[in-house]
Image 1: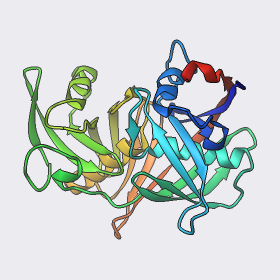
Image 2: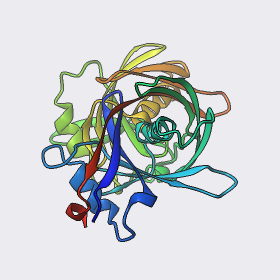
Image 3: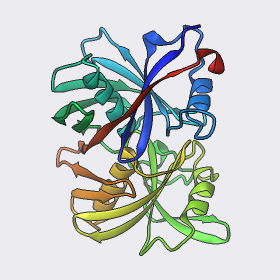
Length: 286
């Protein structure tokens, strides 16, 4: 079989392999493909794959499926979809500034604000309205919302606040990152209080307009950045009165801008940069 062509982009170090569904054999198991190609040692290495499909529908231009490195399906990825839209522009598949992208969590609107021939792109994206109900996370508390709810793990008690921004995000507000947040994130991701798992984000508020985060992402583990985790952290910081509604989110990979508009819509602004193109032996993932 012919090798599968792919292109790798990253958003602040959070990297995704972008593929077109029409290039995949009909029998392709996307979960198996993701687990093989995302492997950092035996594959191309990435935090997930983004599979694009052109649509004939009136409400959206393309559909994007995000698969995590462990083979699970993501409802949404802010950086993954941004990398997918960058792919469309880089390959001259789409040349209009605006694009409507359908995802498992609804239609997101992307607007190109910067592009270079070297493969650097910057987008604004309307990614939807946050959901705060415990059932939307879901969180097994029986309450209406999850704000500073106690969750015990490893002998410690964590106060978690949760929101769904296309993916479930559970935030823990901290004074610093001296705790073993990786161990806590790994355990809390699969905690019984999160029956469908969750992204675990540790948040340090700097001031009313700036926060810093560390990320343990559902299905991927530690990542240098995450659009949905940045959005969730910013929204929850504003919702709990720690910041205003416009927040710069500093992660280890870079700074993502989040504007939780007065109409409820989240506006996410960030980069996508080309890493390389490659070919993957199709038979490895069959």
